[in-house]
Length: 184
Ligand SMILES: [Zn+2]
Image 1 (tube, helix red, strand yellow):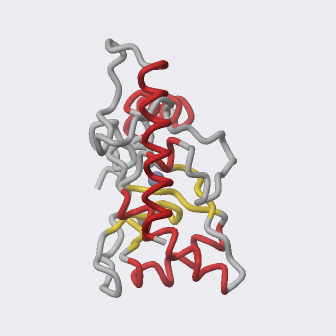
Image 2 (cartoon, rainbow, N blue to C red):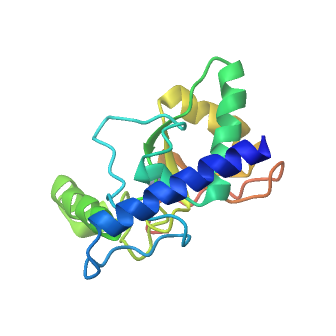
């Protein structure tokens, strides 16, 4: 198994290098990739009300995540499926620019930047930009993960976002109480 995975990672790396060489101009400043082996060419966006599978390995929303976080969520998904629930990804890694765009849109939606900040962090503070957060859906999956996530180290980070999970404890540990919202 280990050697198969190594080969797959090698192929992924080779593909990423080709993409980087062909598609990336040096002056295009983006968020620094979380590891030197991962080149992210997109912004990580998943369309509104859309979701991707945890096995969609080519999507930047997953490729930009902390590998430990992705592994934990995949482990949880395997067990959730035994309960008839699939964990779908509605948001993962986001580029700095994409996060700013979301904040700008939220400011329009909520009428002010102050109100928008309760739901959308700044690019500097967002754990999506640093690859440390993942949004899960649908609601049944959120319910499942809130109840069982601590077994994998996964915790609901904000009380007003039942879909947003981060690695906030050790597997089998206890989650800290969720913070009130993204301004907390
Ligand atoms: Zn989130």
